[in-house]
Image (tube, rainbow, N blue to C red):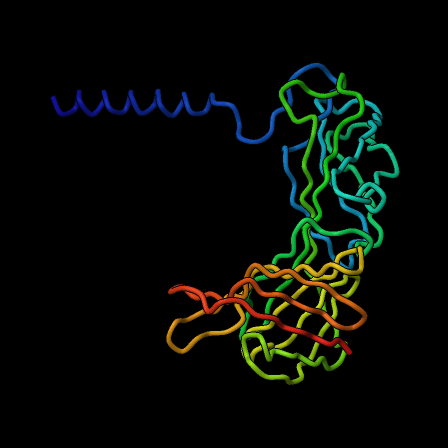
Length: 272
């Protein structure tokens, strides 16, 4: 009886194993006729670097490995001047026998446009990492060439982690702000972007802000600036800012901790 039961289990296991072997392989499968193309996914997150030659490679594939094939790709964005800074200078081209290639997006001076966001994150000690986001959309020009089961459009969320160099000494007037004094701090400027970092601003974590392309508006996202001995992290939030000459004025909506708010204030930074 035990032997028959064991044989029954072995038979069931064999069926399951064989059945699993017949399943479709994992990965992207392209369907439809030959010569059809598609983006690999509906979204893509490339990192812009100082060594990328100002080229973003966005992967695409096709349904066969036939002869040479070129496809035109359009770049669009609702953000000002993005289609001037980001361009697709040539058609994407598949070589004969090639099932995958890249759409090559060129970009120029990023300081000519405003990023969609300025992201700040803590690293080690008082240091912060600062990055910019630049979203745009790519679409195949001839939709009859697109595989019906895959993406005709892709949203490219390019990001740039900024590198900084020393600019000099800034004067911080915090008389009506968090610290209540005027003193000097080292200021850094991002390479290739109008982003500034004030080191150990309130004798704690660095802060960063960006001057928009209009040369007047300053963007300063919510960020932790200090650690209160009783209430923990202090966030400088709801900031509006302007720059006139070398003077940056940050009007702070509130300095907040987990327990509540210390109210607002003003930080005035005179750049070197």
